[in-house]
Amino acid sequence: MRKMSYADAIDDAIAQQMSEDPRIIYLGEDVQMLRLNLFGRYGENRVINTPISESAFLGAGITAAMAGLKPVVEIMLVDFIAVAADAVLNHAAKNTFFSGNKWQVPMVIRASCGGGYGDGGQHEQSLWGWLAHIPGLQLYVPSNPADAGGLMLSAIQHEGPVVFLEHKLLAEYLRDYLGSGGRRNQDYHVPAEGEYGPVPGRWSPIPPGKANVHREGSDLSIVSLGVGLHRALEAALALQEKNISAEVIDLRTLVPMDTATLCESVSKTGRLLVVDEDYKSFGLSGEIAALLLEHSIRFQYGRICTEQVIPYTHPKELQVLPSGRSIEEAALQLVKHPRGM
Image (cartoon, rainbow, N blue to C red):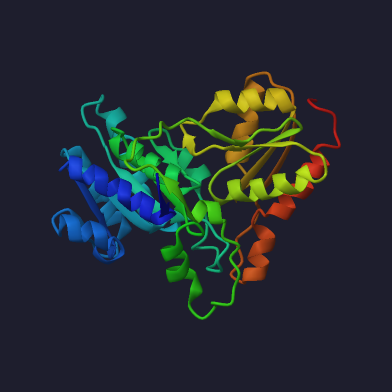
């Protein structure tokens, strides 16, 4: 085992796969600077700078994938996928289906996501609920370096389009580049276990659709992903001091989703709290509740989500985003009710 940062783990897994598969190319804005190690190793023919036009270079990635390459396309912020919505929704996600499986689109769309560092509501969204809603896309959101590298390997090896989201609070270079500026006195409450940790000596793919139970418990199940997983673990420690046993589950991937682990956990605890940094309405939190109800599981339910545009002012954004304290308070309300319904 070795230790590595979250962002370095992703790049290291990409480098390993690029050394084994000459079809893999990497493209995006300023990637020869942002991914300097990849550029130095593989050169300008495989690590390609693009103009500032997400619709153009994401569309180029789709056609490159259809022609036999395996592109990793970096969109600096997931918010900017909106600029390339047609390419994602109507081409990457649908070309295989509409061609009767004659045209595959094996590509990874890598983007940063999430808030908590003071960059405003058009730069700090998560949007995984919206993207997971689209048939034909897979969607991965790792919460630590080991998962980040292993899931990136799976994403590259998948024969269809995968959206791979890295939370900016876990990726130090993004947090500093986008959030610091003149605000170096800000406390971003970065989860240490998510930003830096042990990784394997050689990467192996982590199968998508396999959630990770980080902490076992008996009184309620807390389900999250990304930075929300670390906020949930923080709350679980506080709840333990109040003699409440919380099971904490990291989804890791939204599509595919590990329904079996969710069903097993909530059947045991009889209570579910979903922590979702994405928007509340029509999103992941409601989807999880619906999946469990479709499996005839009876449970008490709560959710902590983002419910408005994320403010630019750092103290105000912290009031909007899920926190260890807000999760703890919601859990305390939930355990007041008998298990099930």
